[in-house]
Length: 348
Image (cartoon, rainbow, N blue to C red; front, side, top):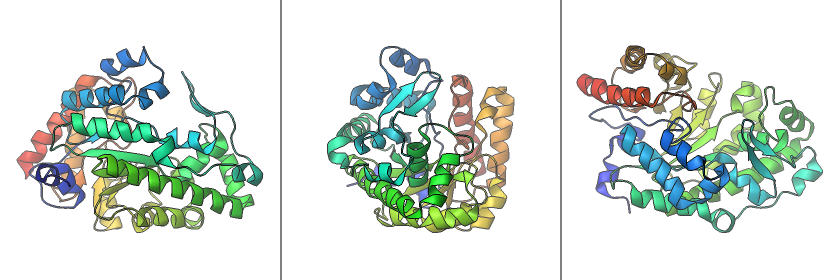
C-alpha cells in the first residue's frame, strides 16, 4: 500500500494534475555516463551485468538521486532487456550501442519469437526495483519503465539503431498480419513486465516510444495506435503512466488518446502552445539536453523560459526533452534542478 508521504509527493501530485508547492523535476538518464560514480562502476562491469545486479543498479540510481536532489528516481535498466527472453541475441558494443545478432526480417522469423514470462526471465529487473525502492527515501517515488511496442519492434527488425527505419517500415507495409502478431506479442510481454515492476515497488511507469516519431499520423493510427491503446488499457488506472516519444509533434493528440496520465514532450515543441492544443493532461518536459553544455546563466535562462511559458499550471513535471547526454557537466545538472525548485516556488 502506498504510504502517505509517497501519495503526497510533488511528483505524484503533478502526475494527477494537483496543486504543488513547486514544480517537480527528474531527468531521463539521470544516473548515467556523465557521472564519475557511474563511470567508476562501469569500468569494472559490462553494461548488461550492471543491469542484472540489484546492488550496483541501486547504487548508481540512489547516488544520482542524492547528488542531484531530484523529485523522482527511475530504475536503472534498459528498454531492450525484454528482447533476450524472446530468443534474440543482444549485445552492447562500446562505441556502437545495442546490436541484435539475429534480427527478424521475415514473417517466418517473427513466428519463432518466444512468449515472455517476465517473472521467470526478467526477475532480476524486479529485484532491482525492490532493491532501489528499499534504498530510497520513503517519500520519493520510483519510476519503472519499458520500451513501447513500435520502438521494440523496430529494434527487433533493424537489429540496431537506424536513420530511416527502412527495414521496419518495409516489414510493416509488406506483412501486415505478421506485424500485428509481432506487436501483440510485444504488448503481452510489456504488460506483464510493467505490472511486475509495480508489484515490486514502482509507483509510476514510463513507456518510451523513442523511435515512433519516424511515422506519419496516418501510419501511427494504423500500425501503432491500437497496440498502445491496448497496452495502456491493461494497466492499473491508479498507477500514473508517462507516455513519452521523440519527434512526435504530429502525433501528440493520438498519443494522448492512446493512453497515459502524463504526456512527455520533447524539446522540439513549444510547451505552452502544445499543452493548449492537446488539452487537459499532465505534461513532462521539455528542455533541450544540449542546453546543459552552456554556462549556468544560460541554463537558468532556458529553464526560466519554460517555467514562464507554463505559468505555474498544475500538472507540469520538468524534464529534458530527451536523456542527459554522456559528457554533460554534472554541476550544470545540479544547477538546473536547484533553479527549477527555487524559481517555481517563488511563482507559486
